[in-house]
Image (cartoon, rainbow, N blue to C red; front, side, top):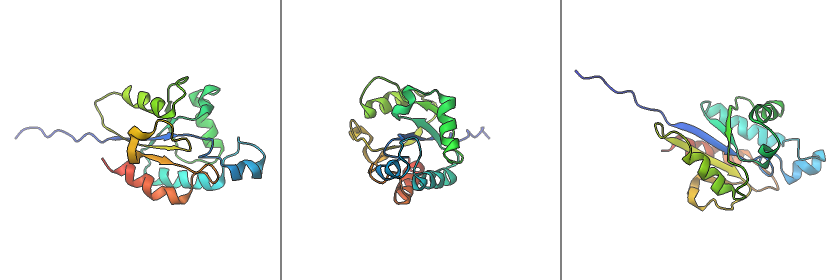
Length: 157
């Protein structure tokens, strides 16, 4: 009998924006700052991460311009996000979020497929992502209403 080759499990990646997704117009008005995440957005992301514990977070937010990876990880931890593993950030200075996401994905090793979702309130350049792009309404940010779709897409090839 020949050796069975182990099936390579896909990486699950969440391309995550902060402003308009993790905070919202409501939370910014409530707290007087964009630096405090919306409790409902944190709860929704925590639900996604609880059901997809192997998911990796790649920060696409403009916050990456002034913070390094350890600081972005600390931001999520300090805001109450549980289980987020920040593994990267999209390239800077492209000014098209969709293209930044594409370049990050294309730069990844090809030995393991990637199932991704992009959570963003800016649809610029997102057409190529199709249903894997989840447009978030910046007025309310990420909510539990987005969770089911996000998990379905992370599970689907």
